[in-house]
Length: 150
Image 1 (cartoon, rainbow, N blue to C red):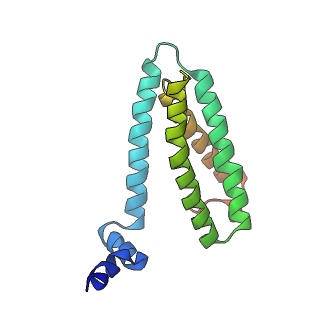
Image 2: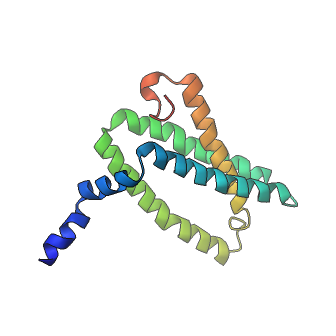
């Protein structure tokens, strides 16, 4: 009896169907971008009010994120099918979830300036993502572009 009750909650098809009844894909995308925009604006305000503005930190973060988001995503999109890309995305998120706390811990343990310049890293990273979106819109062929840029 218990297996039948929990089975519908374990099934990914049913779980997705329940979530999709609440919000459409477009609404979920808009909500995600709205939250990212709110966090970016908050970080931008903090960076603007910082005594020494961390220009170097923001430039390095923008370059690294532009490199990671752009060419790596385009290469993966060309070489792997949608199901494999989905699995790779889940693995990448899992690895990031493991590495971020380790990085913060090492930064605190060795007094590295990563934690103190978090907002600079965030603003620079988002600037790199925006740069990649602009390059996709202006310079890349249609078949290589991300679905949301088309």
